[in-house]
Length: 261
Image (cartoon, rainbow, N blue to C red; front, side, top):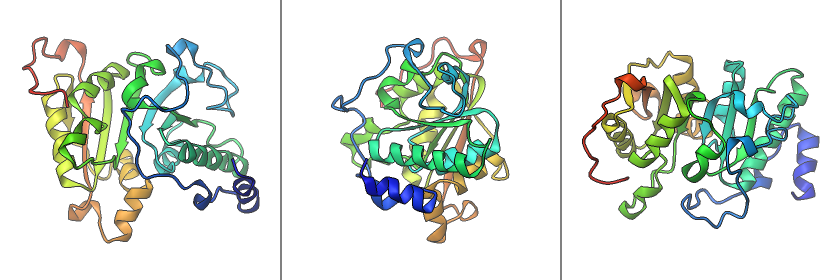
């Protein structure tokens, strides 16, 4: 990391985004990512991800997963909202480093707080079971993901028929999946894929739910939509919440999906 980035951290208390500029998107299906993944969750050392805990096995206690955390707005909010361990995943290295330094600064400014939040550079579309165990999570969040408007890129969308099987594996029965976007077409895609999946059932989550409020108001994208005059009440933000069904409630012979996207 450039010396100027560390100077900014010490001088102002928080990292400055201008030192962590990165491309807005990357291809999550590319294997040319330049770093290694653990083969199984047993191979993962979490000490650097949750430094305040000093526990190499802390990842086994993660209950909230923020996929594609961006600059960490939701992860920070979740750290204050719940004592449960929150893991924020981000595929872009510079953005991940920003979030880690942001969390370090918050821990210094608020001793004893934010130790329950960690950030890891990881590709959830390819390697989620490598770090998350079966039925480990209570909540998983997808906030303002890349819409990938072109049809040929729909397979890059973070919510798809194939990937929902992995999220069902990671979510405990009764666990909740939250998805929010400001793109109506993408919201309809989320709902269609989740409605069609045998492991998920939609729940009626009110905007007053603190977790719904967090996904709408805490993320950088959510704040940008609000600055542009968009709010939950006027239909500028679309969200859906789904519960992971119990195994005995899952249809053992669901209709075949027309494609894997």
